[in-house]
Image (cartoon, rainbow, N blue to C red; front, side, top):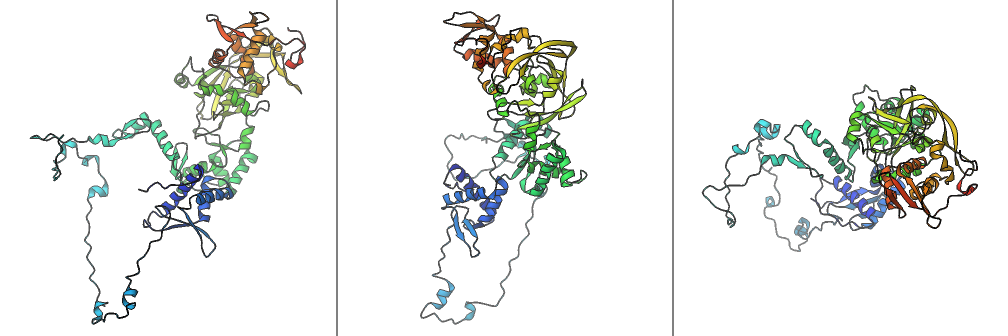
Length: 609
C-alpha cells in the first residue's frame, strides 16, 4: 500500500504526474523500497505519446510541465551520454542512503596509529569451508495444489469447535453462560458481491442465471471500472476485452492503406473482415482470426470512424461519413438543435405504444411531416430507436444502415446520427425516396429484418391522386413557399397533407430560414397571426387556433413533439388555453399581419387560391 503523494500544478499536470509516477512504480515493483527508480525522459514521452494520441511535441510539453511542477518528487539529471534522466522512488523523491563508514574494515585495520597485533591469522580469515545447512522439503496439501471442490467444502455444521484462549479481560457486555453462543458468519455472505448500482448478487447461482438477471448491470460496472484505469491497461471494444499489451498494433503505413482502401477503392463503409483479408492479408481461416479482428477494431478507434452495429462492424473515414446522407440545405448543427427537445424529456412517441411492445412487434408506424419530407430526415425518437440497432461502443456518433423498400425492390444507405452532447439524434439520407415515392402526410412503417444492419421501410398504397401541394422555391437571395401539382399513390393523413385548403395562408407568414426555426416561440406567434382567428381589438390583438392545427403547421418548419409544443404554450406569457375540450388556444401577439407586397416577409404577390 502506497501513500498518496502531494502532486502539484494544474489539474491536468497533477493527473499526468500521477500517471508518470504510477508507470515508474510499476517498473520498480520488485525493487527495494528505498531504491531509486530511473527512466529516461525519451522513453517516458514515447510511452505516453502512443497511449494518449497526438504528436510527440505536444506530449513532450505536457510531460515537461508536469515534471517541472513536481520537482520535489521527480529529480532530473543529465547523464554522460547527454540523456535526460528522471529519478524518483516509491515514496516520492529519491533520497540516497547515508552510509556510516566510520567502522569500515579499512578504517579499523589501517587508520589506527598503533593497531593491535594479530597472534592468530585464523581469527581474521580461514580456508575451512563452512557447513552448508540442509534445506528440508516443504509438503503442500493437495487442497492448495488442485483447488477446493464443491465436495470438499465444509458446511457450518461440520466445522470443529474452536477454543479461544486469551488473557485479555472479558468485556461486560458479553453474557457468560453454561453454553456460550458464538456469532458465526453465514458462508453464503462471503459468496455475494455488491455492484455500484446497489445490486447484491449471489455467486452461488449458476452463471447463466446470474448473467440473465444481472448481465447488463455487471457489464456496466466492469466497463466503469475499466474506464477509470488511468493507464488504460485493458483494451475494450463493445463487450469484448483483452489486456492491452497482448493486442497487436498496426503501423502508420497499414493505417494509411486501410484509409485509402475505404475512401478510394470501395467508397463505402467496410467491414472489419474485409479490411483484414484485403488490406492486412489475414485469411479468415487463420487460427487467430478473431484475435486479429479484435485488435483491428480496437486500434482503429483512434484513426477512423466506427459506424457499425452489433453483428456488422463497419468502418469509415470522417470525410466519407459526412457524405453519407448529406443534405447541403441543412447543417448538422442546425438539425441537432431542432431535435434536441427529444433528449430534454419531450419525446412522446411511446405514449401510446411502449418501447417493449414496439420491440416485441419489431415495427413502428410514422406519419411523415412536411419538414421530414422536404429535407429527407427522420428524428430519432424512442419509438424509432426501438427497432433500430443500438450503438456498439461508448460515445459512438453514427451508424450506417441499409434501408430496403420491398414495394420498389431497391435499397439505399442511411446515416443514423446518435444523440451527443447538446444535440439530438436523427436519420438522414431519405431525400430521393421521400421525394420520388411519397408526399407529406404519408403513413410509413419501419421494421427490423434478420440482418443486423438492414431495415425495411414500406408505405400504404392507394389509387393515383393529384393535388396542389406546398413546396419550397429556392431563390438566390431568399426562398419562399409556393404550390405545385403533384401526383402520388400512397395513403396519407389529409389533415397533414399540405394542400392549399389546409396551409394556403402560409404565404402570409414570413419565410423562416433554418437557423431562425430554433426559436419556437417566434414560429408559434407567426402561425397565430397568419392562421388564427381574430378575437381581440386593434389595441389588444388576440388570435385563436386549435392545438392540432397549430401542431401540423409547426411540422412544416421543423421537428417538434406535441409535449414540447404544450410546454412552449404554457411557458409563453401571452398564450392560454381557452377551451380544453376543443383544444383551442388563444395568444396575444403584438405583430401585425404583413401587407400584400411586403417583400421583407417573403410574401407572394399572387392571389390566394
